[in-house]
Length: 105
Image (cartoon, rainbow, N blue to C red; front, side):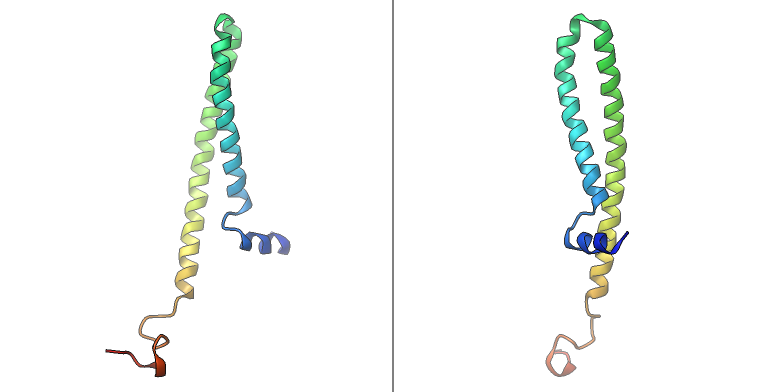
């Protein structure tokens, strides 16, 4: 990843790959909606109906597969962000949160 990509990805909570997968899934899903409508029009032509059904099955499998990849990437990012947030928090009992470094017990 080059330096400009690193700085731009730090400004956004979603990296490019996650965004790309979300867009592909969205567009494939909209395509599936359209194919379902077109299949009604193809009722009188078995060859076209069979082709649309084949495409619908393939696209459905693609959406499922890409959704799994997306879930994995989001899980990776969430665990990475949780780890980074924990590393930034001061340790408990360090006295940083009270004046003079002593606790209020």
